[in-house]
Image 1 (cartoon, rainbow, N blue to C red):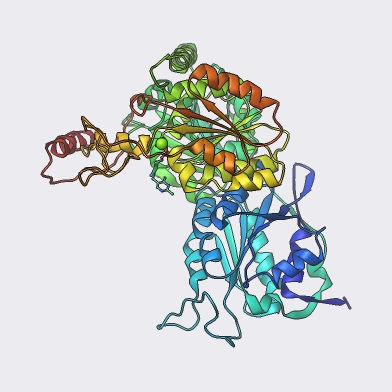
Image 2 (cartoon, rainbow, N blue to C red):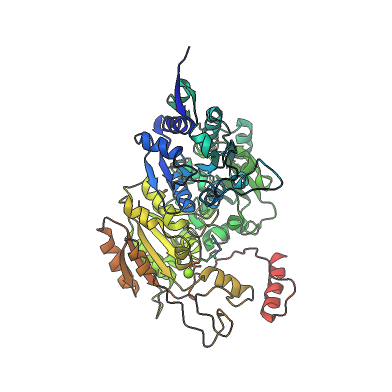
Length: 621
Ligand SMILES: Cc1ncc(C[n+]2csc(CCOP(=O)(O)OP(=O)(O)O)c2C)c(N)n1
Ligand SMILES: [Mg+2]
């Protein structure tokens, strides 16, 4: 008979987590790289004690903000191609619910994170405990129920023995490439500290194989037939290409068949920017190269994409009346979209199998040459925007150019919200499959620095360039402190345009004059509009001083030349650096032959809104 060990529920869980491994393509590795946490009465005596007692099991990382630590965990998991993850432990109440946004981000982006929010007493002895929300209509809910819709798996451990099945289900979901996302095990604070006889088997090393599943052979055959009969096929590479490490298989399929490739935000870097089959970004934030080819494509092969509105330009990108879709995806949910022929499987092996089935077939030489020509034309547009020489303040595109030029191919650029993700999607010259990290599933302001920290934890050998707008910086920049604490270097580029360039531009296009998007003093009852002839002064925010006060070495750059020089100097720093630069709010990168569906007010007193509505109705029809 197998023996048991007497442990608290928290000790058992920590030991279990440290024993979990994954294996893909013959390479085995521990799944969890550590545990982020912020302690309070809801976890200090349970999980906190378990981590304290056995520090060799999981390295403890101290965060400043619970939302940020989940972002860091998401960045880590993405950088590890979902073959690694971090645990996040919090107290009850506000510490717990601070993680909800991070959980949603992880689930939207299909990135594994394990969340262990503390929860109210299972025994209900001190009912209500400090920070408990009492629901007059139900005795068995807590604030942690708000994790249910944003988690791919949720459980609450009411009794210590329940750790055993709960932890195994958590792992099943975390390592499942189709199911993965935030997994939440709400952990009542009394149960964490209660002991039980833990079966040895639960604590033994376990290796979870990450399979490379091939789609049904008949479906593959039909897909090959569809591709062979297409004249203008287009492949859309999503994040799945990168997670599956399918970029070499993709390149070889493209070279064999001449099928050109457009990339989603998560899929950018699937091909190097200068590959002749690379059309770059597709959709709302796409290049003219990808969007022109998309408009006439008769067959679209989506690989590892969930087809968001940014990728499909709100379902206007593919305008050929007879266009058909083939969707390669580990998740049948995504593979079924757009009435597509579903190839449910792993991108790497599926692309290899398709290459075999397409042996001897290729697109017309003229079509192949058209893609190569568009690739070159697009790259001249990038060169133009990198070197605009705009003044007196530089354009944001010049900042991106300076950072791209300064970065080595394997360095990583990180961004998430504002106007930079779209500009980066179009303009960043990606040279490495892991060199481009823009979180655009949830596009969450505040992800940038925290996510960048996670990226650096996962790949300390790479330089990490965090591109962050002033709005995002003000929302969540506190993990600079964690980066300093851990000796993890981030190169943070603070792009200041005194408010929301992105939403300001959107607002102007909808007829509302940048309302609520500038950082100015209130003047005559107004916070400022873009058409103001004598605007109020800007708010006296000094982001560089702020970053400096958190421990970063700071460079204040007034020109692109100063930025370029600062970036060079920053390379030899070994701790976190912030380079602050002001850019022209009105000098944006245009959109290239695409449309995004944002509804305009149907009735309004404002002429500009009525005009925008008219244009919107035309566009929609
Ligand atoms: C948490 C969160 N709140 C609101 C938004 C909506 N939003 C998208 S971009 C943006 C402004 C971002 O400002 P900044 O970081 O300065 O970038 P900029 O637009 O100026 O480039 C806002 C409010 C968001 N994406 N995330
Ligand atoms: Mg801004």
